[in-house]
Image (cartoon, rainbow, N blue to C red):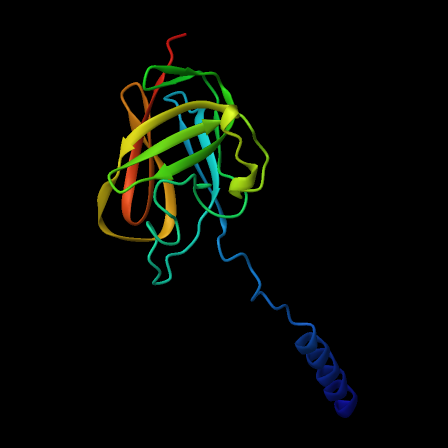
Amino acid sequence: MKQFFSLVCICVFTVLGTNAQDFSDLDKSPMEVAIIRNTDHSPMARIIYSSPRKKGREIFGDLVPYDKVWRTGANEATEITFYDDMRIAGNKIPSGTYTLYTIPGKSEWTIILNKNINVWGTISNYKKEQDLVRIKAPARTAAATIENFSVTFQPTENGTKLLMGWDDKFVEVPFQNVEK
């Protein structure tokens, strides 16, 4: 009986060992989400993006060229959803989902909200005629290197700031609530 039990254990562990999962092909730029809520805890805005890693590379001006449309992350195009009407740089943004593109520059970025959604992030899918709004935001120097491309929201008195950063740069994009 002891030998039979030992044989069963060897067979089970051999089968488990040969069927072990290999996770080496996991996404190198995992999908992330950031959300901001109103004071009543209802959602104000949400952004879904893929977060590439710096991994010792030169980012802006090299991996991400200056003055060219960037998908603002990796993989699928970054999408931002506003649950309420918002205002950015005097432009009213109706509630809904938009693709967020950027054009990084040395001293400022162009932030683009585009109506063409559910697209793969390659620039060949970008359609300028679908731009809802373009605004400029100063490129700022981060206090420390940002290894993973990161996006977050920071609450403000009447809305939120969208913060996006990677490597040694970040931008702030203010959105205000539209009075109902």
